[in-house]
Image (cartoon, rainbow, N blue to C red; front, side, top):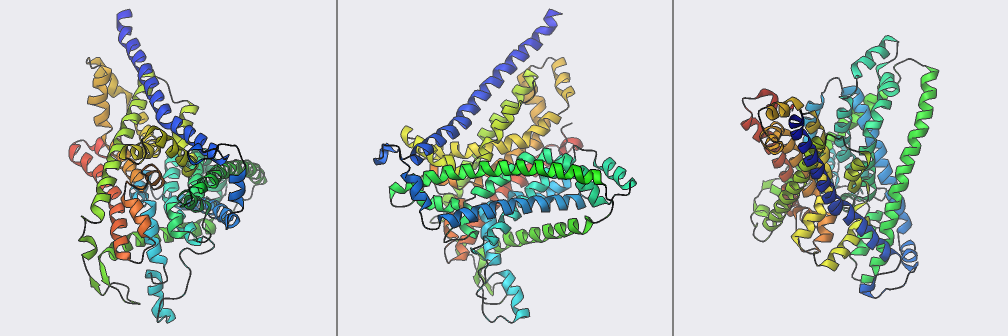
Length: 578
């Protein structure tokens, strides 16, 4: 009996050792940089930055920030666009799921949403700018109907109210929330709830709002907080679609950080901490609103009230979701059209002549940016995948589930504003001589790639049938051989999907690349954002098209490779690890 238990004890010990090693690595590589970055930012916000001659604690950085031209408007725009985009996105996603969830499974929904999830934020924003501009496709389509003989003088992009930015954020956030909600619904007995509610005379919409939504919300609360934090601190989309003078708070801080006057780094640091506080307050507001809705919901449920009154509203939200999806698809198509356009006169819907000239100078243009982008995406994704697999394998061998603090550790980089700690992290990297190189950018990007890879891989890993490993163990396979010969081949589809998500996240990184690369590591994202304010839409379209093509290629490989390797294994081909 003792001899039989010896391999089990050895596996448990090995599992604890592996788990501890991964946790230490993640803590040192994830938590420590974020904490050190915030510490350096806090010191600069308090007036202490010895490198540029400031040694004493002072409130002058905060005073300089508050008195900066346009600060109040920037703060208001950030709150309005961030909260507005998040609330509208959640409402539209919930309404669309309430109408479509019986008509679309999680797998079909994932296939439909993948193009929108894969498109980088900057590329989508540039496409929307092309689409919404006074000379864009929408205005061209309206010209014959309204009688425009020239592009109208409409402020449809960079409008002072931030409406274009809100629309752009919704186009990117609604697909993510839809996927999250569809995944949550797969864990609930939705059909039984609907049948029970309908049998009592309640309308379908009322059943969804009163019974299903309260069960879905705890499962999607954390992703909604991620969306909220992103909306309040987004930089690349705000640069392209948001108001320009004054801009949102994140763009204002970026201008201060990159100003010729190096002393502006101090008020910029104070603003970075203010933005972190703003995100924290928004979380408290979300949780407070949740408690208020819970009380109102209990009163509403006890009050009764059958009917179909929710149906028109839910259908209206679904139609709005369809319109936003159509807007996003046209935006991505406009990138390709502009990259090949040559002569395009008003008000023609298509170019009068086409050309490859914008694509013909890779050596002096996009080739180096493409190479840097591919290199960074491959390195950060491989590193993140290795850490995620080691973490999950350590949990399996230790036979312990994931603690709440470990889950919070994974989500931490997604819940804090990037600009709040990246500047301080850049100062730290300068101190140890790492900044301005590819290694620093890989480290910074991995802070955000690893959480998404880990989240994408966790559920499929846990769903793997444990009998596969037991059968291999009964044949004498050790833990490492079981991992390499059984688990990884069975989980090939989820692993490649997680890798594709990692590539998409890496390609979309703007601030980490800009700060840690010190402007010397040019990627498709940094170049596309810079070119978005130029007058040559053709060159901008080339960079944005390439930027969007990389994630699409990664997702295509994630589908193609398992289709080839598992062509004779139907369950594995379908991505079912069980």
